[in-house]
Length: 251
Image (cartoon, rainbow, N blue to C red; front, side):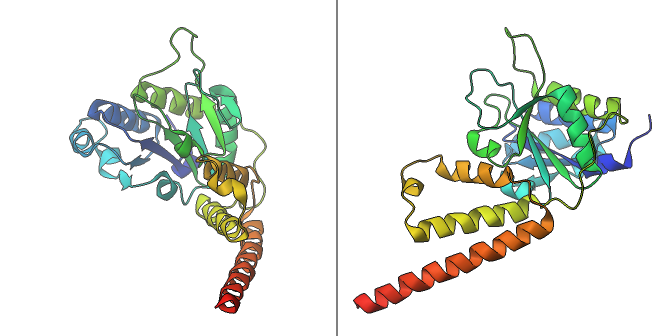
């Protein structure tokens, strides 16, 4: 089976994985379909060590990278897609079925790295994890049993990605901003809001996640991201200078 060179831009990210069999199954599916880059976020260490001794995908597991946070794991990616069984969750992102989402991912891989996130076996991705995503993907299943085994979900998604590489959405133009750039914008915007005394910042535990989702929905290009970040930093500098001058006058 020929493997598209663009698939080297895909990062499969397992968040809070706890079962070595599932980690091993995910790695084996990656090896089956020609995807090499596995990343694990805050895994159960015993499970991760045991999975690395699994047979069948030793090269993928040997090269797996471990991260403490989702933000670190997706920092180099300009598209971050989370997977979800949906269920009864109140989602704050746009949602794509696998067959439609796969064409969008394939198109993006022609221009830059993409992270495909899978949550823990028991709980899936948390709302905080999802806040790092541009949109969400789900595998259509029957309503009576919507949740899939982690290893199986990885296999189904990767199969769909490689099944028809000719089926692509319109390729993206320009150079999309990376998640690291978007996270710098997010943190600088939050700093500006704190300095301005924005009231909602302290009234909702989910506010920071809402700001992160808003920033990612902008779909900024690299140059635009740097331009916006420069403007926000100038605002922060002026606000902090004003606060400092006010404090000195009070003394």
